[in-house]
Length: 322
Image (cartoon, rainbow, N blue to C red; front, side, top):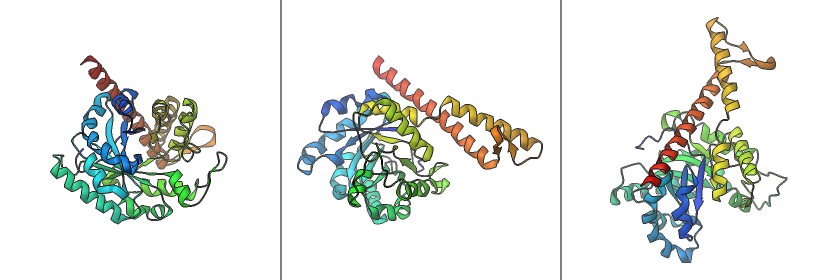
């Protein structure tokens, strides 16, 4: 991808445990936009046995067109990164950085590993998962500490433990300030660094965001993804392969949304043509330049999603022919 990471579509990050060889080897079959080998969750006393395996798993993850990530722990940054950063890696998910210094340290580690492991300079991305109140407080400096940072999300379960809050399915304790701040800060990052979307936001709707249920139905996951998209998230961690397709659908603008926004664009263009800046629209609404700008982005996002799905379908077909 080069030093400028620009625009991309990652609606689904399928998380697979490296303790389950079969799950890793079959992960490419599930149509995820990205696959994440979850080294972070491996117990400390088993990490040494797992780390040497990761290098050989990376390239096969791409067989279905997915991008390849490895999740690593801030607490074991150097050793986890040493195991993860090899040819075939697109990025690392760094769990629980709390400051800009943590991110800069990770950036320096990745610089060294790209050079020593034969990877193009400044091509390994950083996806940050914030899990403490301190990290949320420091979010602006954290997400701007390195140009490698393309995506940020919350580890809501860990955050709630840090705050000593027990969530319930009926009560979302971080709906406004916490989740809203992540979205607004990330979306507001300079476009020259990350394109119109700013730093991408990783999250899914409540309660799946804080109370993950592996037995959630496809419709529950799709609705949670759709809800997350509507408030400003771009994709989600998929804790089970059954989450992948509902997330892909939930984070993709629907045909009905595209029809609406194309109508917005036509209406606004007609108004501008006769010198009007605010144009009457459906049911007493008005279309203005900001409305038109949003429509442009949503229509472009749908085109990107369709292109991404075509790329994955082509990769999957090629793999199955070979």
